[in-house]
Image 1 (cartoon, rainbow, N blue to C red):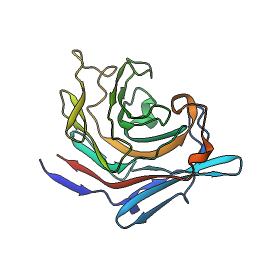
Image 2: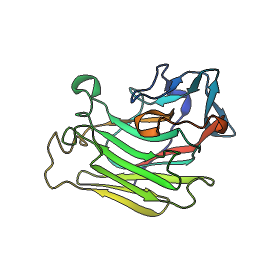
Image 3: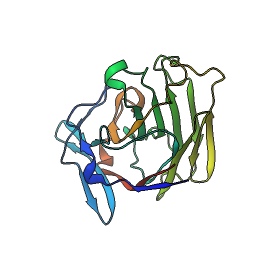
Amino acid sequence: MKKHGTLKWEMAVPTIVAGGNNEKQLYTDKNHQLKDGNLIITIKQEGDHYTSTRITTSGKKEFKYGRMEARAKIPVGKGIWPAFWMLGSNISKVGWPKCGEIDILEYVGREPHQVYTTLHTQDSHGNSKNSKKTEIKNVEEGFHIYAVEWTKDKMDFFVDDLLVYTFQPETKDENTWPFDQPFFFILNTAVGGNFGGHEVDNSIFPQQFVIDYVRVYQ
């Protein structure tokens, strides 16, 4: 497969908004940095609120099919919710979840040693019936590779070399398979929320989501 190379983070755009899903953080343009070749998202408690960063390649780098992977070290602790995911580039026209969502990595600190991979489609009405939770004993330790191999027929999800989930619906239409168009990347860490858990351990902060690279092979 052709390697597109590591995405250049200076091309990504931080979004200064609060998160959805009843999350507690505020996304800013001051909670990330490039250091020693890594993109570092720092999650902080600042007074009575939390701050983080959400970075997207929307309108800059979008991809259809291939192997999408990130090598990253996740933040940990109750209330933390890092993610490496993709959204359909037509979201502004058709909305969510009809645009499709590919969650390559989600981790919630209240469930140690567990990694989620999920597809959201109109057919699932935003629920996570197309989802897999996998126990990875050492996921909190050091860097791991989180990847999806995406073709016109199916998606295979990996943590390091382990195949953790395959999504291959029998019927492929706009409601079950919106994955026949370009998607863009998102990297962020949320705090709390419906999925992250409403109980937050404030003693864990600051935390860091450290991304060595994002690569695409086609």
